[in-house]
Amino acid sequence: MARRDRRQSDWRSLDESDVRIRPGRGSRPRSKRRPAHADAVPAMVVAVDRGRWRCAVNSDPDRIVTAMRARELGRTPIVVGDRVGLVGDVSGKPDTLARMVRVEPRTSVLRRTADDTDPYERMVVANAEQLLIVTSLADPEPRTGFLDRCLVACYTGGLDPVLCLTKADLASPDPLLDSYADLRVPAVVTRHDEDSTALRETLRDRVSALVGHSGVGKSTLVNRVVPGADLAIGEVSAVGKGRHTSVSAVALPLPDGGWVIDTPGVRSFGLAHVTPDEVVAAFPEFAEAAEECPPHCGHLGGDEDPDCALDDVVASGAARASRLASLRRLLISRTGAEV
Image (cartoon, rainbow, N blue to C red; front, side, top):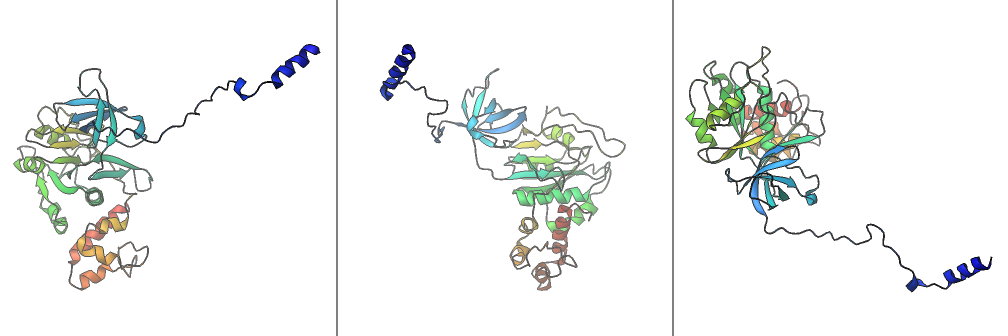
């Protein structure tokens, strides 16, 4: 009993200077400041593969570096075409790994959703200057609904659209070109049996993305303009849907300057993330009048939107009725309905 009392007396005689307190984990204040990485080397992402990014230092196709994402970037999406800053080993030697510490602001973004009810948009390509919407004139037949959706994605994403019509040796391009005349979209027509000078000039010194259904000849075009691309070319199946010959986006350097970004073949191009006002904004003659429309106007006119102010623009002679019809066709295509 005396021993216990002595132990308690010793404990009571201690003060804070006699007690050593072990700091808990995380007690050290963390600074929110991050290094500026002023010495980061600029590069362009040319391929993505399982958590690793292939980057062209200073957009030089002969200086390819493999990089990982720095922790400070968190879950920032990084896609082909992104301009990034690299630190660490940027030699590109085997078994070396650089670190991406910065993603520069994007000048354009090509986005899509899996379908029109999918709330999650997917970024396909960043910083492309133009989008070549590749469609075949036959085998398989052209699908104008898909073309319209790609045009909407261009207008809302900041890309210049270009229609690229393949297999002109099988069918005339004139009917399809006529249907898009009022949209003033430039077009390139190619044949399987001859080279296309117009296509090469369209791609020269620009960053161009290609999108299209499987089997329309997209990989054939890439193999033609990029010698040694060695992209597999699938055969069109009996139901008109080819095999997916590209499984992820990849940027390839062009011999005469510029880059071409080949994207995977797609069977749908959802636009759940696009609003009607974003589509109208691509038509300058209607954009101002759209602000006078009633709330929640879908700009479709008729029984759907009887008070749509876009009709007044045509009635005043400030725009052609065919331009409004084209605009409304794009708005309808955005909803997934057949035009």
